[in-house]
Image (cartoon, rainbow, N blue to C red):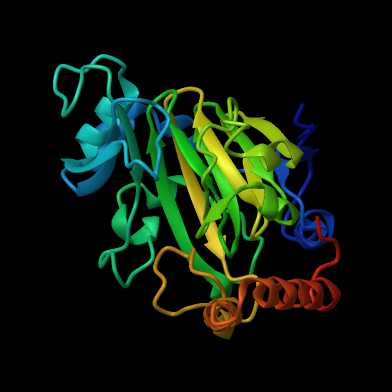
Length: 313
């Protein structure tokens, strides 16, 4: 049976004590009682649909609620923002792409999707004054603010980000399951994503180590803010139609981050360089006979254990 731990909850967190009480702990934490602005009462589906206008949005559309990045069980389609909100809020559609019960997921993008990070104050100026983003980090560290809208039931696959972020749940309820960076070896990674797409009913024969990963769980209510430290894996299910905003900031020196990364999910430059070197080393090892390859590979693992890992499973 996989171990499950409830995510810590904190009250009375503000700009003066966020770093000490929350960020420095390097663990996820649900922050309650924060002032997130008028959005907490104004951002109904009707309001957003009325004020959002005809801004064209790229969305994920799926016949099933569990999006699978491996088999790509979703389509990318374009709709006006007002229509995105309307469809995501309803369960039976009169207009649809696949089925009357299809699911929608929207993640805001920058003006130039290949170069610019999302910023709701630029892409959604008509509602930018409704939300108050907690000032828990220096303004110069700000990277992006991502507007998210999801149909009830929609589940986003397990992944990690390289920056600290706040998930502001404006309305609707959302279940979040997180895994610590130290559980990376149990999550069967492909890039920044886990191959275990169904975390509630995993294929144990295919992913036997997954049961060793510890689940950190919480349910976000409207108005809650979840602090997600960099490198913590997270899997999100919209229990109801929901609207949220993710705010990412550079918690390390700016030069560590790839300047050509508008999504904030590329590995830090030193990490990416290390992985490239490792890939080259593995290709060189392939030149050896199998028993020699096995021996020197074990020596490499031992070096990594000694020099880099505080604990190695």
